[in-house]
Length: 148
Image 1 (cartoon, rainbow, N blue to C red):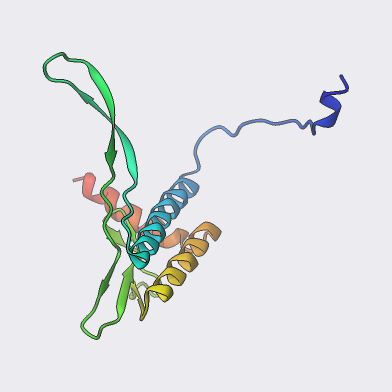
Image 2 (image 1 turned 90 degrees about the horizontal axis):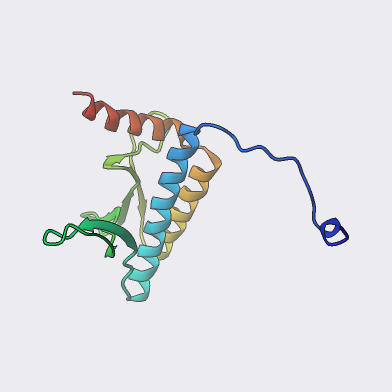
């Protein structure tokens, strides 16, 4: 019994059901993490290729096999006509409106270092829940396309 006395024992109960707001927030946060890794790799002159497990069926034998495949990852930023970098944060394929009025969807930066800082700032805002209403609007727009 002296071994268990060294541990902190608590009463715990797992929450039932999923919180959709938290689920969408975590989804966007992980996508922003991938963009941060991609921007850092590009700045350092290397490639970033995350992998995922993919299950497929062999057509000849009918056997299911799991293989590791490279996940497709597109940059959320581009260089505009003035030479500045525009960063568009996306939820799925929909850009997220970043201002309160819902009119501005991009962040303009001038260097790769500023791009990384902007991505980290956006990730912190998403984790803090500051963009929950914008994420909900983008999610609703995506769901509306499937309801046709």
